[in-house]
Length: 362
Ligand SMILES: [Zn+2]
Image 1: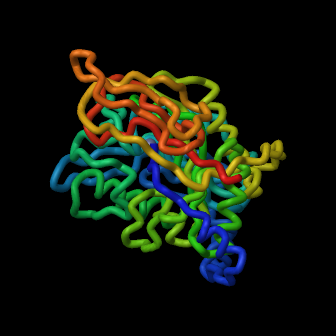
Image 2: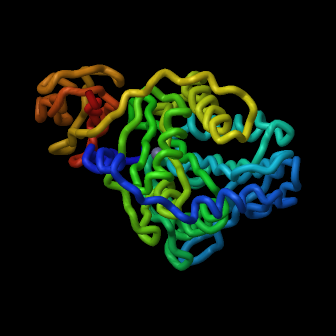
Image 3: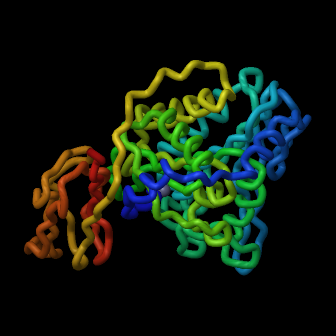
């Protein structure tokens, strides 16, 4: 999961009156169509019309280095560079499997532009089945961008991705999902940067992706040197980008995988990278605010609702007991909305998020 942050409509509404634009966007779009004969990420160099597989090395530093798998599909025809990244949280498996499927299924012959696919950013988390963090340094791999070449492993990996993947791309899609302890319904995020031209393109990407709910993020970092999240590392560098989430709590549901694969292909069609006419997605519902409920103490969580349930303010979401089954917290919805995710497992520490509720824009 990426983040659960409050959003407001104020910035969105001010957009309509905004005249700001991003002068870099035009120049970049042009350079992306320059028909470069080869495209390299890490050890993967794909000639025009080819697919190359390799690794992106995170050099050893204050702790160990490692290799991140990477695929480059350099289309038969020129066009934009789209980076698709998953596995920042290495146990959000549906998103990882979705990118694995794209590596195999997208062919250079059908492609105008270049697809850079990074299926598992957090290899230590994937291998050791550790949710949320990189077990090597205890850091979330979606909080330390743009990274630091002399920091710990997560910071060095973030720096490598910023340089080798974000800077050469025109667009980026960061895929996530419910982690081992998260019973999550699919949704995407649209970041409002305030640059009207860029926001129009990223909004079209979010709509094309096709998930029923889109969270409007207006409070994301604006400073490219303190971008924190991967998507915002791209968007603060003038590249229209989105985040999408599907999958939950461990086992891979093929329908979650296909939602993500189809979403990426829909965005590729929308960016004119593939000819496939994307079936127009149903109009999404926009979530203008996300409220969360957190654990008051360590305990055991017993859910009373499933993901995707609409709840009224004050509705019971679940209960927390101590380790001898004595009630210690009644978990209720602070506001009416949609259960975007509810904790999937009994284990609960003080301060953990128990549920997040999306308030849909009327
Ligand atoms: Zn995640």
